[in-house]
Structures are given as C-alpha cells and as structure tokens.
Length: 389
Image 1 (cartoon, rainbow, N blue to C red):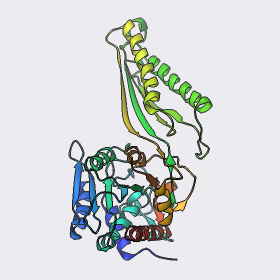
Image 2: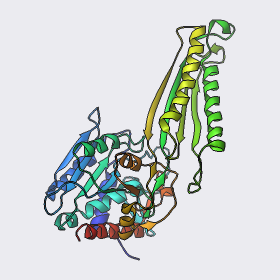
Image 3: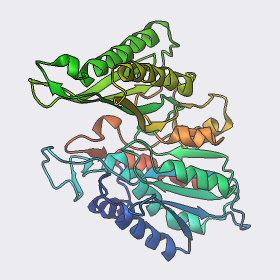
Image 4: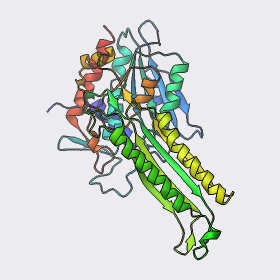
C-alpha cells in the first residue's frame, strides 16, 4: 500500500493536535499556518471575526511573473465539531495510525486536506507557476459557513479573480459539481403568561408556535410533491424540517415563550429569498393575530446560518481541469452543504474535491484512509504541474 509522505503525516498530526472545535477560537491554528507560510516567504492576510476571537486566512503563491490575479483557489475550513459524549478508542486530538487509517478529530473533515496542502507548500513556492495558487482557510464552517462569507468578500475586494476553486471537503476525491443550500432559522414566540386555570388572561406561545411548525411541515410537503426535483440527489427535492421546539415552564402555567428551530436545504434552482419570505410572512401573520389579542405579544424571526447551493455545469472548463489533475469525474451530487456555493455565487467556478469519506466526518473515531491522502497528494502535485506548464 502506498503511503503518504512523512511531511504530510507530520502536518496532519500538528493540525489535529490543535483543538479548533467551533465553539472555541481557531487562532492557535491560524498562528501555526501563518508561521509555516512565513518560513516559505508567503505573505498572508488575516480576516478576523467580528469579535476578533477567530479568523480566516488568505494567502497567495504568485505566478513566476509576480501576478496575483487569476489562478485557482484551494479552500478548506479550520474548525471541527465537538467530541462531547462520543466514545473514542484513542485521544481524538492525537493522530493514531492503525489498519491503514489515520484516526483523530478532523482527519477527514478536513485537516487531512489542509495537511496535504501545507506539506506541498514548498513545491508550490519552488514551481515556476504561470498561474497563482490562492490558499483560503476559513473559520466556523461547521456552524453554518459563517467565516467564508468575509473570506470570499475579501477575495472579490482584492480583485483576485481566480479561474476556479477546489473546496476540499471529503468527497473521496470525486469532483462534486452540485449540492443543496443550507439554511437554519430560529423563531421565537412571545405570549403572555397566566395560571392555566385562567387561559383567557394569558396568550399561549406554544399554540402559535405549533401553528407555525405546522405551516413549515405543510410547506415541506408542497416542496416534496410540487417542487423541482433532481435525481442526482439521494433526496431529490428541497427538504425542510422542524428540528427543535422549546417552550413552557410548568403544566399549570400558560406558556409565554416558545422557540421553533427549523432548516431547509434547497436545490440550487430554488429562489431562497422568496422561499424564506413565505415562511417569514407566516410568522408575521401569526404575530399580528397575537397582537390583536394582546399588543405586548411579539414574534422574532432569525436566520442563524445560510449558504447557497452549488450547481457547476458539466461543461465548465474548470471541471475538465479537475479531471486533468486526477479528480474522479462524476454526475453525483452530495447531501451535505459546503462553502463551495459562496465561491460559486461570487462568480468563481467551483467543485468540491477532497480526500476521505463524508460518512466518517463528525463521527467518533473519525478517520481517513491512508490511500486517500496519497490520492490527494498526487492531485495537488498534478495541479502544480498543470499550473506550471
């Protein structure tokens, strides 16, 4: 069995040891990567989160003529999901190799990909590139593709104009051209509390929240039966789910508070703004009804996370470039969301292509196959050659 290089394994080990669970800061990893880039003379730009506790990192290995515009992007997120409540056979933040697999939190999603990129950094720097390579590392992908928004905005502001982007989420090195959008919402219903024996003096927040939840479920059915469909997905239609409801304090109290959490994942052809507005209008109508009974009642509607879907044409030249670099061509589309839609929405042709199987992401004893890391190394090396022709 072919083995990844010692440098790749060392880079992955270093990254996994840095706990960048999304609820915590990722700056320790950003510091680490900045240091590696600096050792090879590559300048980088931090794009901090609003509170300064996290950051994206953007770096460019310029073309041999010094040009920074054009080229391709290698993109990945730096955060990982928690290990809380999971039973691991080994320390999740210490790489362990056994049975042809590399175990550790983030090995698959997606520090394996980042480790390969950093291991190949010397080759990128030494190559006589005719097109630049941009490295784009984001924060808070796992909580809704939050950080990549400002990262992509900075690339647009700096007029880097890359000709394509590889988002290295685990795809078993397949060139994935499509996935659904991701949209997460929190809707709070604020009624009036009273004793349960005097319901007319109160305003039951749970009752209105349940009506809202029923609307969401009916809309989900409409989208499933009447909405657009794409058989490339396991779930061919836009999906929508009420995933959590919190409300009430006691069985003898009319509840004044109830919160509904829901999400939808739409096909790229669906107008997300129009769909969200339909749901928002339902909440507004219920709020007016509540206020008619008691003007102190109100409803808040918050989108907590969102990222557009991806729909890159099969005929897009960048898809052919991916195949030339060794990516596996496929018409399959994936169920999970990624930051790829943000790059695509900015006019950058994008495919998802990275080592590992998404089935291992987020799981206890997360792992990546050694041969997947080898395939990713070969992919990056071919990419460097292609950009140096």
